[in-house]
Length: 203
Image (tube, rainbow, N blue to C red; front, top):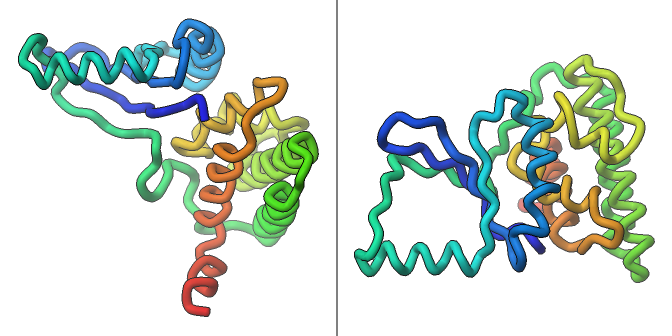
């Protein structure tokens, strides 16, 4: 995938935090698209956004390890790759309609995973994302999204946790890579249906 890493860094001098998005390839070509998502998700421009390429980030890390530059970062919170529970609404109080939407989204995801033509997989994946967006909207009493892009922006953006960048980039590209988005949506569904995951592990 194009997204390599995303983390939030807090400077030691009390300055506002900075969200650093590390991408594969040319960072400049991704900066405007990532900035659009950042502006929709963080209207106050906090944390500040920086988009860097992987090669440049690794070079800075080597310089720091060699003692040629000094980091003034107080703490780093990794947002992607996600480790455990994402920051999304609690599952308490979910109504039957929400769970039905999530299960229907899972069926679309299964179809995307089995699809051979990439465009067929992309279509099924977009349907899964839209259904999950509708489930989040119903649970949070928000307007229902009408397309994949709406499901990933505005107040619904935070519902996706740290998977949001991967999925938003998928929604914006004309012919996006399927596998990173498949993995992200699978993580979201597994998180919303823990009893199914646990049953699969015990089987």
